[in-house]
Length: 316
Image 1 (cartoon, one colour):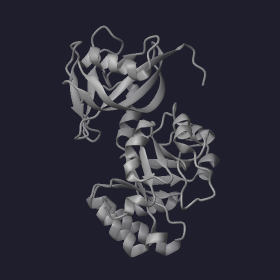
Image 2 (cartoon, helix red, strand yellow; image 1 turned 90 degrees about the horizontal axis):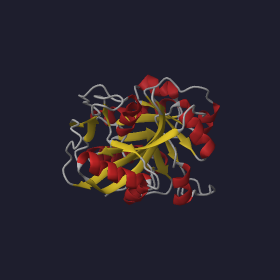
Image 3 (tube, one colour; image 1 turned 180 degrees about the vertical axis):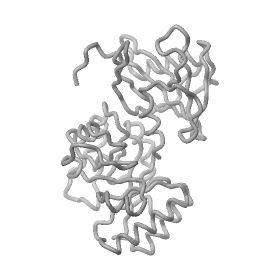
Image 4 (spheres, helix red, strand yellow; image 1 turned 120 degrees about the horizontal axis):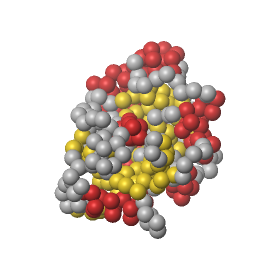
């Protein structure tokens, strides 16, 4: 996409406490959009990496120093005064207590109860991404059986699972409809979100939260389906570009490692996975051969989280 003015490189920190509250700050008087709320950060200086710039900005603005931060999404946004490329980081550990060193206001917020306004326009997509959990489970009834699948689902929900995909290629018709209905009912009782693989009509019929498109569906579309939550499977840069163009809510990218279910597919490996998503504007889940202990490393590579077909259902 061409831009009429040079891109201004900007870093932004999504500072997240252990209770899932995140920090927003108001823009000081004298700056464009004064009084608007935003994720703290600022312009990168010559010779700085994004992380170095973020650490400097947080010390200058909030008096804190980063101890642990994960690269996240990049988004380009055009304001009246400039076109900026925002490098978002999730900051999960820091030293010091944030305070407004520039006399700006601070407020700890949650996605479900945002109480400050107005919000800087470029940050709205970030709020939608923040609502997505880091663990994305995929059902596996073909290996577990229906009774065991439902039992393991109950266990996972009790342990905090909040996001899952119903993907049952060996089921169809009334059997799939019954199982999907059971899964949705049980998940919603725990306020967990459920999307259904590929079947938009079934998703609407059963009251699921959305749909997860196959890569073939993704590449065949010219517009985003009219559903609340829409994800897609990607395997390469072309599919990631299409997902961004259509405005998907999230994608999964893989396989990162060799998998039992797709032994013939060549794994991307972490280096290629990280390179593919480096400039992505969407939350990306790593998929393929992963277990829950891979989450921290996946976050370091820039992923939003990990998607799992097997390990998420193993007894812990």
